[in-house]
Every structure is written in C-alpha cells, then in structure tokens.
Image (cartoon, rainbow, N blue to C red):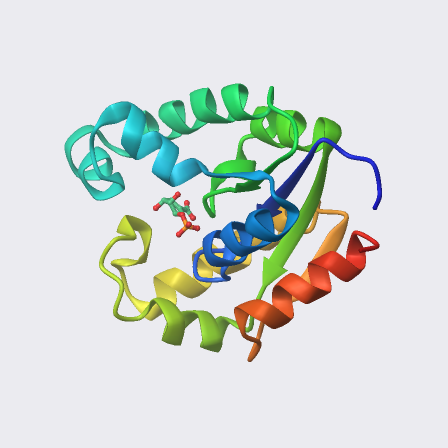
Length: 168
Ligand code: S3P
C-alpha cells in the first residue's frame, strides 16, 4: 500500500463520504473521523441547530477547528462535510499529507439520495438552489487527486475501488 498519513474523502452532500469512510476504516483497521460528527460532539449541538441558532459562519469556524485538530493525526480515514474544503486553509491541512479522494455522483442521484433527509440545512431550498450550489462547488472538489464515481454503486463497490487505488 502507498505510504500516507490519512485518507480524506471530499465531495458534495449525499455522495457517500461517511458510509464509505466508516467501512474503509474498518477494513484498514484505522480510526474513522466524520468532521460533522466531531463538530456535533464538541459543540453538543446538531448541525441543524448550529446553523439555525448561530448561523453558517459559526459552523464554519467549528469546522475549521476540527480540521486543524484531525489533520494532526495519522492513519485515520476522514469524511469531510460537503463544504469543508471551500476554506483553502482546510484544503491545505487535509491535503498536506493525506490522500484526498473525491466521491461524486450524478446530481439527479444525489437529489434522490438526500431528498428525504432533513439534517442538511443547505439542502432545504429548492432543487434549483441545490443545482447552483453543486455547480459552484465543482471547482473545489476538482482539486482532489483521485475521483470515484459512486453513481449507481453500493458501498462495497466504492470501498473496493478505493482499495484498488491504494494498491491493496
Ligand atoms: C455541508 C455539508 C454537510 C454539513 C453541513 C454543510 C455543505 O455535510 O457539513 O450541512 O456545506 O455542503 P455532508 O456533506 O456530510 O452532508
């Protein structure tokens, strides 16, 4: 396997970063960190409540603190939130020694996957709004060295593709 410190999953909401990351970590026997979960634990609030009560800027500050801390660790699989790498400082930290993989999917697939999920404050708007956000985000996700299309694939298939990428 390629020598590396961390494996970092980036990509839009609903591309499977957390589910895939958790399973990959289990297989590698590495720790798994989901930045959103970490934020919820540290603040003792849900992501929804942070957005509603304190606003997105507070969420982004908490997210920045979590990234600073997790990027100091080694041999962890990190599932980021869909907006984490918009902050260039987060990108720098995560990319420094990590193997960054973008998970992506057709927007139609994403809309179906996240359609009934109420836990994502940024998806509460119209389908048009989601499309706009998705388009604006592509340039950031495009920075990842590796990309995996998850459209129509199950978790096992995506994890197997990542293992293949890692040479395992
Ligand atoms: C966000 C994505 C969410 C969460 C927050 C903001 C975004 O994470 O961090 O709601 O800006 O795209 P997931 O990508 O895990 O849904």
